[in-house]
Length: 111
Image (tube, rainbow, N blue to C red; front, side, top):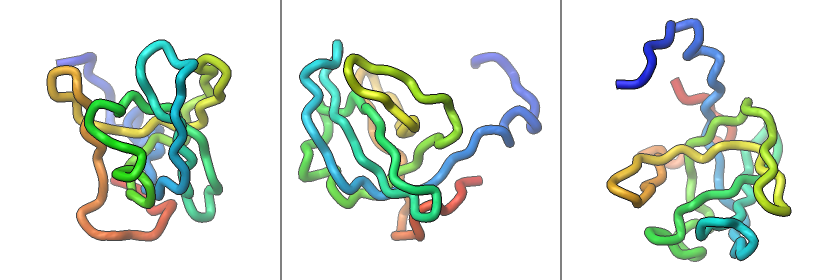
C-alpha cells in the first residue's frame, strides 16, 4: 500500500466525468500515447495525454466517457500541455480506463 492520506487530503482531488471528443496520435511522446480533447460540461474542454494505445484505438475512445482529475496543475509533455489526468486501472503494463456504467452528464463529480 502507498502512503496513507487523510480524508481531508482525498477531498482535494477533483474527479469528474468527461466525454472524449477528439483523439490524435502523439508521435512526439516518449512512450506511445494519444492526445485527447475531453468535454467536461460546465468546466469546459480540457486536453490530456494518455498512454493507452495498446488497449484502445482512436475509434474506441471517441465519445467514450471517462474519469479524470481536473485540478492538477498543467503538465508539459513534449510539445503538448496536458490539463487533466485520465484515470485508469493498471494491469501489468496495460491501462484500462475507468468510466461510468451508464451515461451521465459531463462534469459530474465522482465521489
